[in-house]
Image (cartoon, rainbow, N blue to C red; front, side, top):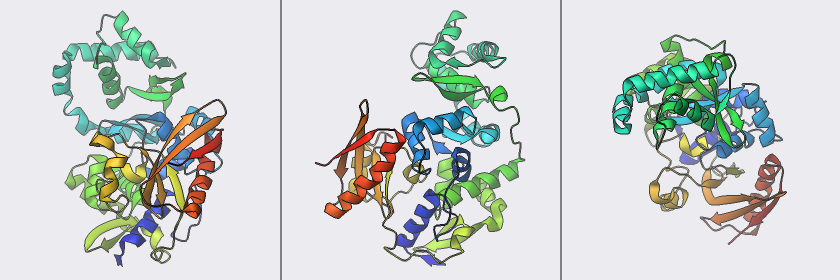
Length: 371
């Protein structure tokens, strides 16, 4: 089957919103379902990560998502590309072993750059393991204080690296914040009954979840998102089998959840839905090639300086049409919108209506401002 770019965007929007089919049936029931559908969600910035859930869970507040995290429906760790993601709690360990290990291969060089001796790294893991054993939970600063108390230098990037490394090795994971700080727990205690698929099964699971939440897209995008080798990416698609459908776009082979083709792909221009997404949402971060969603002339506005920091976006019919910033006050959220394309009065009214869901999520009254 050959799809047009607009049909691809319509299907990606269906994937983004966790719809069971292109006909639009169904939404996610909760945090666990969202993160399981998508496989993993960028969460380097916590506020953005929380709203990535909220955008897919109408009626939820930030407090609702945090409560689900306390129930361990999902957790944060470094499962791939050396970046923090939300993952299904029971899947954290096998994801670290499957994808995080490739980042660990470069750890020795990073240790050398930071002046960390291998015996210091081993000692740090032992110290953290002892401090947290028996259901312990410490903030980031408390973890660093424990290490410093044992004579381990945590200055500069050393402390952050030690916590990151211990998490990538599967000792720690990030629990919900204590105040405004990350907190850490022992992964084995936080998730005492992890899922343990064989390697082939794990490759198939991550392939299905990736394409289900982001398809149609390419094997190259899949390998880039996971950090897997090209061979492993190909194997994962093969293991997923008939659960994935293959379609072409301008002659390029792409994959998607086969159930999305149970009904005809949406016709061009049929889906004008407006979404307001956080800067680090999977709708952009889930691809190496973002050209279908973002016009070339707008890329600099979304990632100023090309430094990996993404601005929050307004998406209409699958295309980014504006960026936005928020300022939280006591009972109000002030939202400044910067259009990237002409937005007329009716367009702006739709955008303002979309921001009402975000305002309910942060439990504030919205004030939307235009230039």
